[in-house]
Image (cartoon, rainbow, N blue to C red; front, top):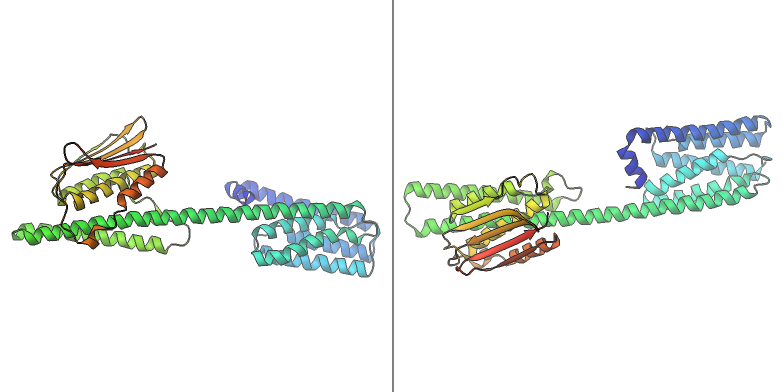
Length: 382
Protein backbone atom coordinates (compact mmCIF):
# COMPACT_ATOMS: atom_id res chain seq x y z
CA UNK A 1 0.00 0.00 0.00
CA UNK A 2 1.36 3.40 -0.99
CA UNK A 3 1.81 6.22 1.56
CA UNK A 4 -1.09 8.11 -0.04
CA UNK A 5 -3.35 5.08 0.30
CA UNK A 6 -2.32 4.57 3.94
CA UNK A 7 -3.03 8.23 4.66
CA UNK A 8 -6.44 7.96 2.97
CA UNK A 9 -7.30 4.91 5.03
CA UNK A 10 -6.30 6.59 8.29
CA UNK A 11 -8.12 9.86 7.43
CA UNK A 12 -11.21 8.97 5.36
CA UNK A 13 -12.89 12.38 5.73
CA UNK A 14 -9.75 14.25 4.71
CA UNK A 15 -9.35 11.88 1.75
CA UNK A 16 -12.91 12.59 0.61
CA UNK A 17 -12.20 16.32 0.89
CA UNK A 18 -9.02 15.95 -1.16
CA UNK A 19 -10.90 14.08 -3.90
CA UNK A 20 -13.57 16.75 -4.00
CA UNK A 21 -10.93 19.49 -4.13
CA UNK A 22 -9.15 17.72 -7.00
CA UNK A 23 -12.40 17.44 -8.93
CA UNK A 24 -13.19 21.12 -8.39
CA UNK A 25 -9.68 22.19 -9.45
CA UNK A 26 -9.87 20.18 -12.68
CA UNK A 27 -13.33 21.49 -13.49
CA UNK A 28 -12.18 25.04 -12.69
CA UNK A 29 -9.29 24.71 -15.14
CA UNK A 30 -11.59 23.43 -17.88
CA UNK A 31 -14.16 26.14 -17.14
CA UNK A 32 -11.49 28.85 -17.28
CA UNK A 33 -10.20 27.48 -20.53
CA UNK A 34 -13.74 27.35 -21.90
CA UNK A 35 -14.25 31.00 -21.04
CA UNK A 36 -11.01 31.94 -22.80
CA UNK A 37 -11.90 29.89 -25.86
CA UNK A 38 -15.38 31.41 -26.00
CA UNK A 39 -13.79 34.64 -27.20
CA UNK A 40 -12.49 32.81 -30.30
CA UNK A 41 -15.25 30.37 -31.31
CA UNK A 42 -13.55 28.01 -33.74
CA UNK A 43 -13.78 24.30 -34.38
CA UNK A 44 -10.24 23.57 -33.06
CA UNK A 45 -11.03 25.47 -29.87
CA UNK A 46 -14.26 23.51 -29.48
CA UNK A 47 -12.30 20.27 -29.85
CA UNK A 48 -9.77 21.41 -27.23
CA UNK A 49 -12.47 22.38 -24.76
CA UNK A 50 -14.54 19.24 -25.31
CA UNK A 51 -11.52 16.95 -24.94
CA UNK A 52 -10.40 18.77 -21.82
CA UNK A 53 -13.86 18.48 -20.24
CA UNK A 54 -14.12 14.73 -20.92
CA UNK A 55 -10.58 13.99 -19.70
CA UNK A 56 -11.02 16.05 -16.53
CA UNK A 57 -14.29 14.28 -15.78
CA UNK A 58 -12.50 10.96 -16.31
CA UNK A 59 -9.74 11.93 -13.88
CA UNK A 60 -12.26 12.81 -11.16
CA UNK A 61 -12.45 9.88 -8.67
CA UNK A 62 -16.00 8.69 -9.31
CA UNK A 63 -16.94 5.96 -6.78
CA UNK A 64 -18.86 3.79 -9.24
CA UNK A 65 -16.42 3.94 -12.15
CA UNK A 66 -13.25 1.80 -12.15
CA UNK A 67 -9.91 3.50 -12.66
CA UNK A 68 -8.86 1.50 -15.72
CA UNK A 69 -12.08 2.25 -17.57
CA UNK A 70 -11.72 5.98 -16.92
CA UNK A 71 -8.03 5.91 -17.88
CA UNK A 72 -8.61 4.08 -21.17
CA UNK A 73 -11.43 6.50 -22.03
CA UNK A 74 -9.23 9.51 -21.25
CA UNK A 75 -6.33 8.14 -23.33
CA UNK A 76 -8.67 7.53 -26.27
CA UNK A 77 -10.17 11.03 -26.05
CA UNK A 78 -6.86 12.88 -25.73
CA UNK A 79 -5.15 11.04 -28.57
CA UNK A 80 -8.20 11.45 -30.82
CA UNK A 81 -8.20 15.20 -30.16
CA UNK A 82 -4.42 15.48 -30.63
CA UNK A 83 -4.36 13.61 -33.93
CA UNK A 84 -7.40 15.56 -35.18
CA UNK A 85 -5.92 18.97 -34.31
CA UNK A 86 -2.43 18.22 -35.62
CA UNK A 87 -3.78 16.71 -38.83
CA UNK A 88 -6.50 19.24 -39.58
CA UNK A 89 -6.42 22.60 -37.81
CA UNK A 90 -4.37 23.70 -34.86
CA UNK A 91 -5.67 26.33 -32.41
CA UNK A 92 -3.80 29.60 -32.40
CA UNK A 93 -2.76 30.20 -28.82
CA UNK A 94 -4.77 28.21 -26.28
CA UNK A 95 -4.39 24.51 -25.53
CA UNK A 96 -5.69 22.17 -22.81
CA UNK A 97 -3.81 22.85 -19.60
CA UNK A 98 -6.62 21.26 -17.56
CA UNK A 99 -6.49 18.20 -19.79
CA UNK A 100 -2.73 17.85 -19.29
CA UNK A 101 -3.06 18.06 -15.49
CA UNK A 102 -5.85 15.48 -15.55
CA UNK A 103 -3.67 13.14 -17.61
CA UNK A 104 -0.88 13.47 -15.02
CA UNK A 105 -3.35 12.52 -12.28
CA UNK A 106 -4.48 9.45 -14.22
CA UNK A 107 -0.89 8.52 -15.06
CA UNK A 108 0.05 8.51 -11.38
CA UNK A 109 -2.95 6.38 -10.39
CA UNK A 110 -2.43 3.87 -13.21
CA UNK A 111 1.27 3.39 -12.42
CA UNK A 112 0.43 2.92 -8.74
CA UNK A 113 -2.64 0.71 -8.86
CA UNK A 114 -3.01 -0.97 -12.25
CA UNK A 115 -1.69 -4.49 -12.98
CA UNK A 116 1.85 -4.54 -14.31
CA UNK A 117 0.99 -5.42 -17.91
CA UNK A 118 -1.81 -2.89 -18.11
CA UNK A 119 0.36 -0.18 -16.57
CA UNK A 120 3.14 -0.96 -19.07
CA UNK A 121 0.76 -0.17 -21.95
CA UNK A 122 -1.61 2.42 -20.53
CA UNK A 123 1.05 4.39 -18.65
CA UNK A 124 3.09 5.37 -21.72
CA UNK A 125 -0.12 6.26 -23.58
CA UNK A 126 -1.15 8.68 -20.85
CA UNK A 127 2.37 10.09 -20.42
CA UNK A 128 2.90 10.63 -24.12
CA UNK A 129 -0.62 12.07 -24.37
CA UNK A 130 0.20 14.63 -21.68
CA UNK A 131 3.40 15.60 -23.49
CA UNK A 132 1.54 15.87 -26.82
CA UNK A 133 -1.17 18.20 -25.49
CA UNK A 134 0.90 21.45 -25.81
CA UNK A 135 2.15 20.35 -29.23
CA UNK A 136 -1.36 21.00 -30.58
CA UNK A 137 -0.71 24.73 -30.33
CA UNK A 138 1.00 26.54 -33.18
CA UNK A 139 3.61 27.90 -30.76
CA UNK A 140 3.92 25.43 -27.86
CA UNK A 141 7.17 27.01 -26.63
CA UNK A 142 8.30 26.17 -23.13
CA UNK A 143 5.07 24.38 -22.17
CA UNK A 144 6.08 21.29 -24.11
CA UNK A 145 9.33 21.05 -22.12
CA UNK A 146 7.48 21.79 -18.86
CA UNK A 147 4.93 19.02 -19.25
CA UNK A 148 7.58 16.63 -20.54
CA UNK A 149 9.55 17.16 -17.33
CA UNK A 150 6.40 16.88 -15.22
CA UNK A 151 5.50 13.62 -16.96
CA UNK A 152 8.93 12.14 -16.24
CA UNK A 153 8.85 13.29 -12.61
CA UNK A 154 5.33 11.97 -11.97
CA UNK A 155 6.09 8.65 -13.69
CA UNK A 156 9.37 8.17 -11.81
CA UNK A 157 7.83 9.03 -8.43
CA UNK A 158 4.83 6.77 -9.05
CA UNK A 159 7.04 3.86 -10.10
CA UNK A 160 9.20 4.37 -7.01
CA UNK A 161 6.11 4.22 -4.78
CA UNK A 162 4.96 1.09 -6.64
CA UNK A 163 8.32 -0.63 -6.11
CA UNK A 164 8.24 0.26 -2.43
CA UNK A 165 4.72 -1.14 -2.13
CA UNK A 166 5.77 -4.37 -3.86
CA UNK A 167 8.73 -4.69 -1.53
CA UNK A 168 6.50 -4.13 1.50
CA UNK A 169 4.11 -6.82 0.27
CA UNK A 170 7.00 -9.26 -0.14
CA UNK A 171 8.32 -8.52 3.32
CA UNK A 172 4.84 -8.87 4.80
CA UNK A 173 4.36 -12.22 3.09
CA UNK A 174 7.74 -13.38 4.39
CA UNK A 175 6.79 -12.35 7.92
CA UNK A 176 3.44 -14.10 7.63
CA UNK A 177 5.08 -17.25 6.28
CA UNK A 178 7.60 -17.25 9.12
CA UNK A 179 4.78 -16.72 11.63
CA UNK A 180 2.76 -19.60 10.22
CA UNK A 181 5.79 -21.87 10.26
CA UNK A 182 6.59 -20.89 13.84
CA UNK A 183 3.04 -21.55 14.92
CA UNK A 184 3.13 -24.84 13.06
CA UNK A 185 6.23 -25.80 15.04
CA UNK A 186 4.53 -24.83 18.29
CA UNK A 187 1.42 -26.83 17.47
CA UNK A 188 3.59 -29.75 16.36
CA UNK A 189 5.31 -29.78 19.73
CA UNK A 190 1.93 -29.45 21.45
CA UNK A 191 0.70 -32.50 19.59
CA UNK A 192 3.93 -34.31 20.42
CA UNK A 193 3.44 -33.49 24.10
CA UNK A 194 -0.09 -34.90 24.14
CA UNK A 195 0.84 -37.98 22.15
CA UNK A 196 3.82 -38.62 24.44
CA UNK A 197 1.47 -38.42 27.42
CA UNK A 198 -0.91 -40.85 25.74
CA UNK A 199 1.92 -43.32 25.12
CA UNK A 200 3.15 -43.04 28.71
CA UNK A 201 -0.36 -43.51 30.10
CA UNK A 202 -0.99 -46.50 27.86
CA UNK A 203 2.31 -48.15 28.88
CA UNK A 204 1.59 -47.49 32.54
CA UNK A 205 -1.89 -49.00 32.27
CA UNK A 206 -0.49 -51.99 30.43
CA UNK A 207 2.29 -52.91 32.84
CA UNK A 208 0.52 -52.07 36.11
CA UNK A 209 -2.37 -53.95 37.61
CA UNK A 210 -5.05 -51.26 37.67
CA UNK A 211 -8.57 -51.79 38.92
CA UNK A 212 -11.58 -50.76 36.88
CA UNK A 213 -11.90 -47.31 38.45
CA UNK A 214 -8.24 -46.43 37.96
CA UNK A 215 -8.33 -47.79 34.42
CA UNK A 216 -11.35 -45.58 33.68
CA UNK A 217 -9.51 -42.50 34.95
CA UNK A 218 -6.50 -43.42 32.82
CA UNK A 219 -8.69 -43.83 29.73
CA UNK A 220 -10.35 -40.46 30.45
CA UNK A 221 -6.96 -38.78 30.55
CA UNK A 222 -5.95 -40.53 27.32
CA UNK A 223 -9.19 -39.42 25.67
CA UNK A 224 -8.72 -35.82 26.82
CA UNK A 225 -5.13 -35.72 25.59
CA UNK A 226 -6.14 -37.27 22.29
CA UNK A 227 -8.91 -34.72 21.75
CA UNK A 228 -6.53 -31.84 22.48
CA UNK A 229 -3.97 -33.35 20.11
CA UNK A 230 -6.59 -33.62 17.36
CA UNK A 231 -7.67 -30.01 17.93
CA UNK A 232 -4.08 -28.82 17.73
CA UNK A 233 -3.56 -30.87 14.57
CA UNK A 234 -6.59 -29.21 12.95
CA UNK A 235 -5.20 -25.79 13.79
CA UNK A 236 -1.84 -26.87 12.39
CA UNK A 237 -3.37 -27.95 9.08
CA UNK A 238 -5.42 -24.75 8.85
CA UNK A 239 -2.36 -22.56 9.44
CA UNK A 240 -0.31 -24.42 6.84
CA UNK A 241 -3.10 -23.97 4.29
CA UNK A 242 -3.40 -20.23 4.86
CA UNK A 243 -1.97 -18.11 2.04
CA UNK A 244 -3.47 -14.72 2.89
CA UNK A 245 -3.29 -12.46 5.89
CA UNK A 246 -3.24 -14.31 9.19
CA UNK A 247 -6.49 -14.15 11.08
CA UNK A 248 -7.43 -15.38 14.54
CA UNK A 249 -5.89 -18.77 13.79
CA UNK A 250 -2.41 -17.25 13.74
CA UNK A 251 -2.57 -15.52 17.08
CA UNK A 252 -0.07 -16.69 19.69
CA UNK A 253 -1.01 -20.23 20.73
CA UNK A 254 -0.78 -19.64 24.48
CA UNK A 255 0.60 -17.33 27.14
CA UNK A 256 1.22 -17.12 30.85
CA UNK A 257 -2.33 -18.10 31.74
CA UNK A 258 -1.96 -21.35 29.85
CA UNK A 259 1.23 -22.21 31.77
CA UNK A 260 -0.98 -22.91 34.79
CA UNK A 261 -3.21 -25.20 32.72
CA UNK A 262 -0.12 -26.89 31.31
CA UNK A 263 1.22 -27.54 34.81
CA UNK A 264 -2.11 -29.00 35.94
CA UNK A 265 -2.33 -31.34 32.95
CA UNK A 266 1.25 -32.45 33.44
CA UNK A 267 0.67 -33.13 37.16
CA UNK A 268 -2.29 -35.33 36.23
CA UNK A 269 -0.10 -37.65 34.14
CA UNK A 270 3.35 -37.19 35.66
CA UNK A 271 5.15 -35.97 38.77
CA UNK A 272 3.59 -33.10 40.74
CA UNK A 273 4.47 -29.62 39.56
CA UNK A 274 5.19 -26.74 41.91
CA UNK A 275 4.36 -23.61 39.91
CA UNK A 276 5.11 -20.03 40.90
CA UNK A 277 4.13 -17.15 38.61
CA UNK A 278 4.86 -13.69 39.88
CA UNK A 279 1.56 -11.88 40.55
CA UNK A 280 0.53 -9.26 38.03
CA UNK A 281 2.63 -10.56 35.14
CA UNK A 282 -0.33 -11.28 32.84
CA UNK A 283 -0.93 -7.62 32.17
CA UNK A 284 2.72 -6.57 31.92
CA UNK A 285 4.31 -9.19 29.70
CA UNK A 286 3.97 -8.71 25.91
CA UNK A 287 2.12 -11.41 24.02
CA UNK A 288 5.13 -12.68 22.09
CA UNK A 289 7.22 -12.95 25.25
CA UNK A 290 4.39 -14.76 27.04
CA UNK A 291 3.99 -17.16 24.09
CA UNK A 292 7.73 -17.86 24.12
CA UNK A 293 7.66 -18.49 27.89
CA UNK A 294 4.81 -20.96 27.44
CA UNK A 295 6.66 -22.64 24.60
CA UNK A 296 9.80 -23.05 26.73
CA UNK A 297 7.83 -24.55 29.62
CA UNK A 298 6.05 -26.91 27.22
CA UNK A 299 9.34 -28.06 25.70
CA UNK A 300 10.93 -28.55 29.12
CA UNK A 301 7.97 -30.62 30.39
CA UNK A 302 7.97 -32.68 27.20
CA UNK A 303 11.69 -33.39 27.71
CA UNK A 304 11.03 -34.39 31.33
CA UNK A 305 8.40 -36.85 30.12
CA UNK A 306 10.83 -38.33 27.60
CA UNK A 307 14.15 -38.20 29.45
CA UNK A 308 13.25 -38.10 33.16
CA UNK A 309 10.20 -40.31 33.47
CA UNK A 310 11.23 -41.28 37.00
CA UNK A 311 11.28 -37.70 38.29
CA UNK A 312 9.28 -37.18 41.49
CA UNK A 313 8.99 -33.38 41.46
CA UNK A 314 9.08 -30.53 38.99
CA UNK A 315 9.46 -26.85 39.80
CA UNK A 316 8.43 -24.03 37.44
CA UNK A 317 9.15 -20.40 38.18
CA UNK A 318 8.21 -17.33 36.14
CA UNK A 319 9.28 -13.95 37.47
CA UNK A 320 10.74 -10.63 36.47
CA UNK A 321 14.41 -9.86 36.99
CA UNK A 322 16.41 -6.71 36.16
CA UNK A 323 17.24 -8.13 32.71
CA UNK A 324 13.68 -9.15 31.81
CA UNK A 325 11.51 -12.21 32.35
CA UNK A 326 13.08 -15.33 33.85
CA UNK A 327 11.61 -18.77 33.22
CA UNK A 328 12.99 -21.72 35.19
CA UNK A 329 11.97 -25.37 34.89
CA UNK A 330 13.74 -27.91 37.10
CA UNK A 331 13.24 -31.58 37.92
CA UNK A 332 14.93 -33.96 40.37
CA UNK A 333 16.04 -36.42 37.69
CA UNK A 334 15.03 -39.95 36.82
CA UNK A 335 15.38 -42.61 34.16
CA UNK A 336 14.20 -41.96 30.58
CA UNK A 337 10.83 -43.19 29.38
CA UNK A 338 10.77 -46.42 27.38
CA UNK A 339 9.62 -44.95 24.08
CA UNK A 340 10.17 -46.12 20.56
CA UNK A 341 12.69 -44.20 18.47
CA UNK A 342 9.93 -42.66 16.33
CA UNK A 343 8.22 -41.30 19.44
CA UNK A 344 11.31 -39.56 20.74
CA UNK A 345 11.36 -36.83 18.11
CA UNK A 346 14.30 -35.31 16.30
CA UNK A 347 15.94 -33.64 19.29
CA UNK A 348 15.63 -30.09 17.92
CA UNK A 349 13.25 -28.73 20.55
CA UNK A 350 15.86 -27.35 22.92
CA UNK A 351 17.97 -25.97 20.08
CA UNK A 352 14.89 -24.30 18.59
CA UNK A 353 14.03 -22.70 21.93
CA UNK A 354 17.59 -21.43 22.28
CA UNK A 355 17.43 -19.85 18.83
CA UNK A 356 14.05 -18.31 19.57
CA UNK A 357 15.21 -16.84 22.88
CA UNK A 358 18.33 -15.43 21.25
CA UNK A 359 16.27 -14.00 18.38
CA UNK A 360 14.29 -12.03 20.96
CA UNK A 361 17.50 -10.72 22.50
CA UNK A 362 17.51 -13.18 25.39
CA UNK A 363 19.25 -16.40 26.27
CA UNK A 364 18.52 -19.99 27.29
CA UNK A 365 20.68 -22.43 29.16
CA UNK A 366 20.02 -26.05 30.08
CA UNK A 367 22.06 -28.59 31.97
CA UNK A 368 22.33 -30.90 34.97
CA UNK A 369 22.10 -29.61 38.51
CA UNK A 370 24.39 -30.58 41.41
CA UNK A 371 21.47 -32.44 43.00
CA UNK A 372 21.20 -34.73 40.00
CA UNK A 373 18.25 -33.23 38.16
CA UNK A 374 17.98 -30.96 35.13
CA UNK A 375 17.47 -27.20 34.97
CA UNK A 376 16.31 -25.03 32.06
CA UNK A 377 16.68 -21.27 32.51
CA UNK A 378 15.53 -18.68 30.00
CA UNK A 379 15.95 -14.91 30.17
CA UNK A 380 13.64 -12.97 27.87
CA UNK A 381 13.88 -9.16 27.60
CA UNK A 382 10.67 -7.23 28.14
